[in-house]
Image: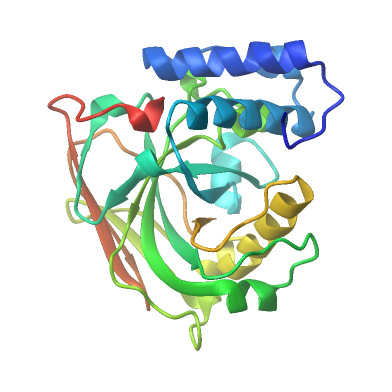
Length: 278
């Protein structure tokens, strides 16, 4: 049974979920799902996301974290939405620093630089505070998120991206943990480069005021919707700057001040595996 309540019929939720699952399986973008969900029913969209998650975990994937999307004005403007959302991170989506990433695994990939929070304690209170989040955080890592949309042409309203796992693709994590203690997350500066060319930049304050505030929002929403954040999970705080296209092969490197760097190598010689899009 879904963890989310919705007034939308189960049949409508199923239609939208099946459309998105078919797009994953075929690696072919689909029409927006707002034609069945409507453009504003956020609860219905999260019900679709939960059903897709149930299908994917039943097939052997494992939930290892969450991602926050649409946290910066720049990204909201790029996609024409005005509120944040969140989605799951599965074990097959996580890549190591410097790993080769194959273009054919994704449909319409873009890339963002983010702060990853690795939790050492549960955050199960719908009234969690920033203090609770910082206390529960074991360490931070620099991260690159590959965002991807199963919706053709990124033609999305808020319900489309929520239903589609908050437009998730994969995440590349750095390997040197950093304590959040004494680090001003509002001043973390991002420089995201492709083969030495700057393609995106930003600062922590652009992420809902602070990456810690973004994770606090997620902790409250996740608890309220019945699937709270748990110890050991990885939480992506959301982008610090605009999305950049992930279309040109080469090295993508994100430098985050105080946290270090993380990079991926995009290659187009065929997929290594397809779990990131299924």
